[in-house]
Length: 378
Image (cartoon, rainbow, N blue to C red; front, side, top):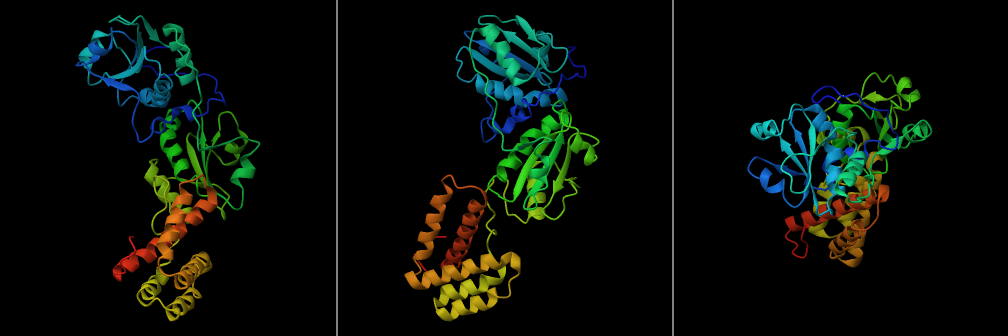
């Protein structure tokens, strides 16, 4: 394979998918396991007591970005191998270092054995993490096992497409992709984060369909290029093209608008979830008066709510009734109980309901503080 020239990808493999390409998901919070070297510390790392695999890359290089997730996952898998380092060098900025090692194209991956300041081999094999693990095992003598990375994105095929995508109770975002597509690979980390942000949302599914391996549904929905992203809402199953930004925040904003959800980019619920603005004044009155008359006033207002907010309105009334029956201290105790439940294994629509109820209780507590009711800490 000629360095710096367009790559010709191999036969797609369904088992590989895109799960290994999720750079930002590998170690959490965006922290990388791949050490970045410069001319200042290269000689201190290479040629010493460890084997070193070095990727010489350029930030603008599409091929480099496409393999970023695989290289990161390789570093994660090799993290416990004390005799081997997985590093990278920005050859566009470290030109003298790149020239010293005869870098003619990007990415160039070179292997430096223990004690060697010059590379013994240039890796020109398949850049999938599984293949790079096998290569490193062969040259280092290690026996690191390859483990595929888990994904929150639902994998679609011709057998499950309709049962998932055309489910009348689900809002489904589908990415039609090809495993060899560089744009798809670059999208993978953000798309995975979207799936993780909505995984507790029982009515929303984030999915992908290998349109290179499975053809029928790509043809049915007129997929002309990769990635093509379409939204299949509860009421619209024709596949509406997604034409927004391909960053996490854009996807989250789009889905919240279409699915009437309140998710944040990190998967938590917005404080507005579960709250009903129309009942805000009634809550303030109730917390000031702590009376059945205030509860009745809230019930009158709740009767005018649309169907979308009826259940939320009922919970407001429930909270008021419990506070009158057991005292206002019931509210923070109940909020804390729900918070403990959310730390457990609850997921799906149940988690959404609990988070929404917690938000309503926080609304009560905030208004209590405004009324100088000391026991409450919003």
